Image 1: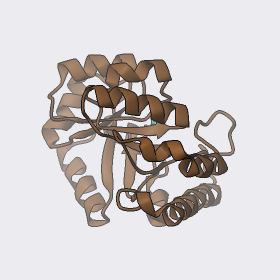
Image 2: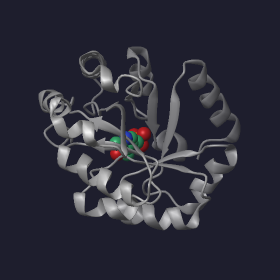
Image 3: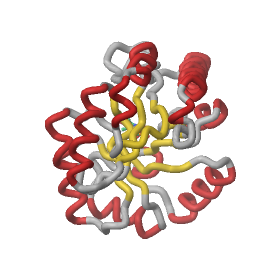
Image 4: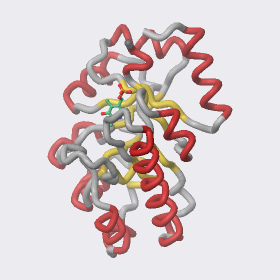
Length: 219
Ligand SMILES: *Cc1c(COP(=O)(O)O)cnc(C)c1O
């Protein structure tokens, strides 16, 4: 677990660069999360619905929960009452379901379009061209309970710095492209979520403004 001093250095360094920290707490205990919460951390990211529901029950209610894992449409209803941000939206179908469930609670959920940048076939996310088509479809303007705030991506897990930089560069280019093409969304569409423990410094160099760190904080 990161020390309090080290945590505060990290956060102040990130905030100097206008980068927000989401602490990825999947597989971490309530006690570990509480410790980081006591240091002042309020944004936490989780990958699994069931695990998130248990943690939501037990932890302070002023935590902003980000969902960052693959989300099945039929599970949206469980997190809709409280989720603050869903960073891993990868289809129009999922957007429509989030909108429908958020509407029941009169809430607006911030969402990221997850775009595929890694070469590995296992990495999730939409292809850029599909994201582009989706934003052009008429449905997207009818999402009154969803606010599309940006894009998220996961780079290939590799030691090859050039490859990582090129994938992050690609995501940034996609982001700028979508932002430019879709002025109706551009007011809120300003977040670029990229960078994990292993590659967040590279991501920030390229222009990330949200990093998702797990192991760096918790191990
Ligand atoms: C697990 C996870 C992270 C954090 O990974 P670390 O390498 O532990 O920092 C970030 N983003 C997503 C989408 C994850 O699934």
